[in-house]
Each structure stands twice: as structure tokens, then as C-alpha cells.
Amino acid sequence: MPQVTRVVAGKKNPGRANIYLDGKFSFAVSLEVVVRDGIRRGMDLSEETVVTYKACDLEEKLYGKVLNFLSYRPHSVYEVRTRIRRYAPDIAVEKTNALVDRLKREGYLSDQEFAQWFAGSRASNRPRSRRALFAELAAKGIEKEIIEAVLPRGDQEAIRAAVARRKNLTREKLMGYLARQGFSYDDIKVALLEE
Image (cartoon, rainbow, N blue to C red):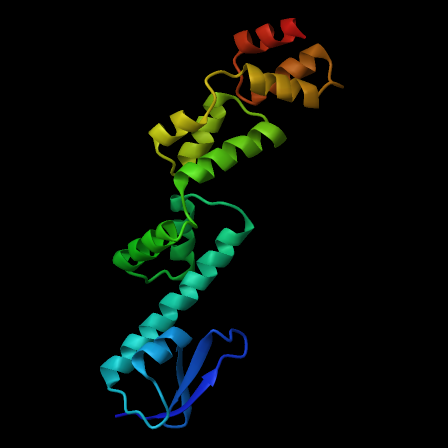
């Protein structure tokens, strides 16, 4: 049985401890695990226990990477699942589900909040038609019910925002620009008549 020869606080992450078995680094675990399981110098660990700790170490590293990914901006569950597969291609579906559930439970992941953020961001920075926003959110794995609840009913407000951002364009170019953003010709005509 391997014996714990050193337990050292992590240099990069002081909330983790590096565990050395028989004089060689073996794995790292959180300090909570060290305290909970009473890991200390001179303790013998079975091979099964070592394998379990190593698996926990990999899961915690993956969790940290996903948290870093989420720290830049909100993401949908679909985007997080895709990122997890990129980080750990061999991960079991059950482990991915458990990680996603943990992120939801801890408040880091919500399709509803992501859809609200995305629609608001598009409305203020890059106005799009309701139809175009619907397609973008659907491509990010958001359910139809959530999209319907988040998106505004009409396009007039988005058209007005787009027109305000593009005042320097001629009427024809403005109409072309709005059509490329997914707005219907009838909605564009009504909005431009109001100007």
C-alpha cells in the first residue's frame, strides 16, 4: 500500500493540497478533502482510494476550467457542455451532467439568464430582428419557451435602435442594412415612416 509521505499546500492554489506518496507527487485535492478524510503523513492509502482521489482531482480541475470559462460572460448550458467535451473528450455523460447540475445549483449557469443577457446585449449593441435573435438563441441550445419569454413581441423598438445607430446612411442603404439584420420590409417601412 502506498504511504503518504508529504501533504503540502498548493503553490498556485492555496485551497488545494499536493499529496506525495512514497516520496513522489501523486495527486492534489482540496483542503476540505484533506480535513474531511484526515489525510496526513504516514497514512497508508489503498490503490482504490488513490484512484478515487485522482479522479476527484481531475473533476476539480475541470470544474475550475469551466468556472474560468463562465467568468468572461454568461453562457448557455449547451455552450458549457460543448466546452466540457473540448476540455475532457473522454468524460462520461454522467460526469458532464453532474458538473452541469452543480453549476446550475451554485447559480453559475442558467439558460433563462443567458437568454436575457444575450437579447439585451444584441438590442443595445447589434440590433437584430426577433426572427434572427430567435435563430441565434436556438443555435445556442436555448429552448423555445425560454426564447419566447425573453424576446420582445415586435421588431419596431429594435428597428428604431438600428436606425439611430446608422443615421449617416441613405434611406436605400438603411433599408438594405435593416433587411440584412432580418427585419421584414413591412416593419422597416412602418419604422421609417415614423422617423
